[in-house]
Length: 348
Image 1 (cartoon, rainbow, N blue to C red):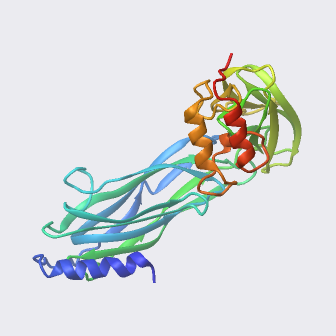
Image 2 (image 1 turned 180 degrees about the vertical axis):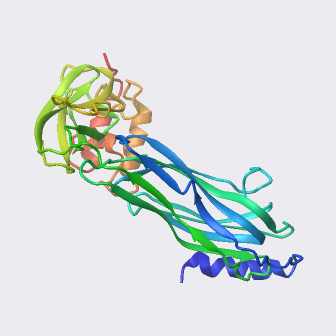
Image 3 (image 1 turned 120 degrees about the vertical axis):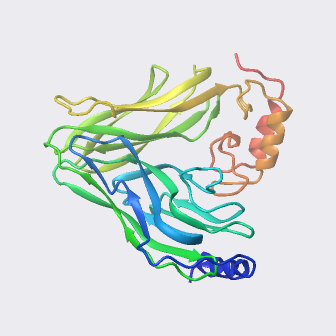
């Protein structure tokens, strides 16, 4: 049994000793996704939409536990907004004071788990209100088939002020991505730099995800840029609907100061969507060796940063990729010594 499912009734049993109990409604309470249908007939890749999860026609609500999921092959989570308590959000549910129990998004699994309860002396909630809203971005719009994606309320528990369960029905949501006319369409969907600050003359790794959203096997170039200067390029062949992750090495010799990093996929003849061929991801600074915080000076602050990161490797709580100055996959005494030897240096 889930931890929250065990905790929520226990809390409510205690609260029921000090809360005036109202009779549970005999009407049909509904937990639903609104709108129930989101539909795209043209290429929706990159488009965002928001759905609302409502608790409708409820009486004597004192807490809830809702689990919600989506298909990560087609949708990316963007954000969510909890509409609790009603005192703060006129469209929300539950009254103050409240106890937040869980608020967990798992973008890998494509799940969201939320549980809240009121506590004495809060009155119970009656009527209709929003538990939360959630925003998605369409990750992939298929060309050769229609995708029916369920926004599923796969576990819903509503509790009254006496900790009894409130009977209800659920209404899931659906996203329909209608098949597109087969065409040529490639995209860059992600770009990440291994570091935000790189010592001049040293190397940094940049990873790029490229996808084929079209209906044909495509061969194309992916090029990474620092501002408008090409860093490196790779040739890619992808069959329809597939993706690949590429790693580029940036030799920063001759570079200095701040650069916007971007990646571009070659525009194909007759390509049906070129808006997603380029993706940008923030600023990377090229500075003097030993500068870890990007202020273009190697000083005591950088000394403290590397000191806190020793020893560490990727996955360690201490890990700071900027502090791995010699790019050997660990932050150790060698990196510490590099900073120490360069204190007083500044970027040109």
